Length: 126
Image 1 (cartoon, helix red, strand yellow):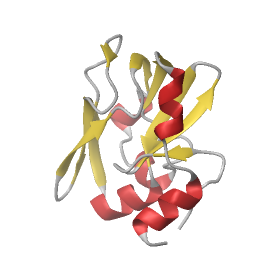
Image 2 (image 1 turned 135 degrees about the vertical axis):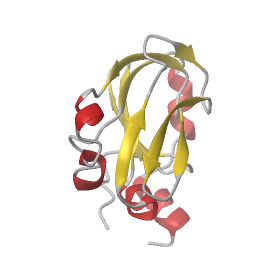
Image 3 (image 1 turned 180 degrees about the vertical axis):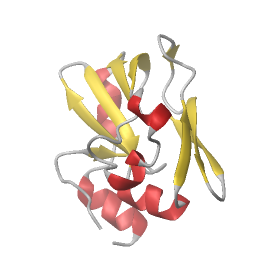
């Protein structure tokens, strides 16, 4: 199972890539595997400012619907519109083309609360 070491992670199985004050967010390989075939990704919070741990969208798989929780407080500045027509990209490339949102970080100190790759491996028993 792929767990890139250059990313940060959450207990909710999301990954975070940080460049300057912008974070790119998606779900981990573990999460997409647990969910199964993803058929729909919904994010209706574009251009909204939310607090960490607030729901920013949902991901729907054949068997279930799961909420997506914001890993850091900030403004959602982009949604990966490719997922509207090809949600299975999250299954095929969760750390690349399957990204979900870009976020303008409001509070950089929250980054310290994210998990390292090693911490995330421990969380999922990898």
